[in-house]
Image 1 (tube, rainbow, N blue to C red):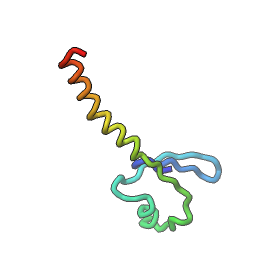
Image 2 (image 1 turned 90 degrees about the vertical axis):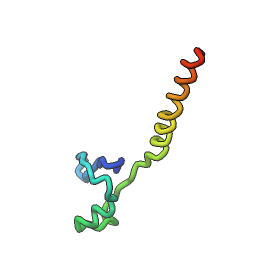
Image 3 (image 1 turned 135 degrees about the horizontal axis):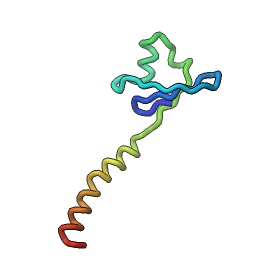
Length: 74
């Protein structure tokens, strides 16, 4: 599983290893550059776009709500 630049690698023997990758390079490209055919590797990419969007929105809206609340004493 790939989450941003974090890798969780599950081996056939059941062992699990953790690693990181370059954030600017895609995992498929990283495999190709290492001489590995990406079609021979099972991997999934965790989509964080909704979580990031909600976090960004909360970072904008929450301070505005707090400013309005304390400005008007609500």
